[in-house]
Amino acid sequence: MNLEELCQKIDEYYRGLSAEFGAAQKATGLNCPPDCGKCCTVPTVEASAMEMLPMALELWKQGRAETILDEIANRDHSTCVMFAGRCTMYQQRPSVCRMFGVGLRVRKDDELELSICRELRLIYSEKAEAIDKKLIPNMSEWSFQAMSIDPQFLRERRPISMALSDALEKVLFYKTLSQS
Ligand code: SF4
Ligand code: SF4
Image (tube, rainbow, N blue to C red):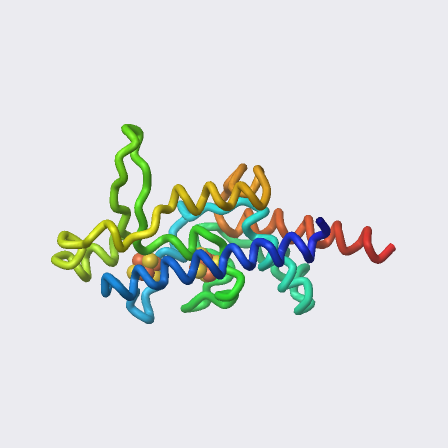
C-alpha cells in the first residue's frame, strides 16, 4: 500500500468514526460550544505519527509541509500547531480529536465507563448524569478497528504537534524518494 492509499484508508476510518461520535453527541445533546477548542490547548492530547499522515499529506499538497515543520520546531507544544481559535485542519484531524467529547472506555475490570470531557461535564452536568450509555460509542472498539488498518496505528503516541512533525518528515521523505 502506498502513502496515498494508506491515507485514503485512514480517511475512510475517520469518516466512520466522526459519523458515529457526531451522532452520539447529537442524540445526547452534549454538543461542544462552537467557540470552545479547549482540548486543542492542552499538552496532554497525544496522537501517533500514523494518525497524522492524512493531515501531513494534505499540508504537503498545499505546499506548507516545511513551514509547519519549522513552526513546530520553534514553539512549545502545549497548544496544537493547527489551532488558531479553531481547528484549521478539521477534515484531517486525528482520531483523538474525533472521540474526545463523549465516549465509552473499558476499565481495568472490563466494565464500560463513560468518558466525558471536563467542559461538557461542566456545561451539561444534569444531562451528563442521566446519559444512556447505549447511545455512546465504545472508544476501545474503534481503537481496535484502527489496528486493522495497521497494527502500528496507535503506537508511540506523542503530543499532537510532535506527532504531526514526525508525519511531515515521513511524507517529505516519501515524496523525495518517489520523485527521484
Ligand atoms: S488537530 Fe485540530 S482538533 Fe485536533 S488538537 Fe489540533 S487543532 Fe484541535
Ligand atoms: S470536546 Fe470538550 S474541550 Fe473539546 S471542544 Fe468539545 S467541549 Fe470543548
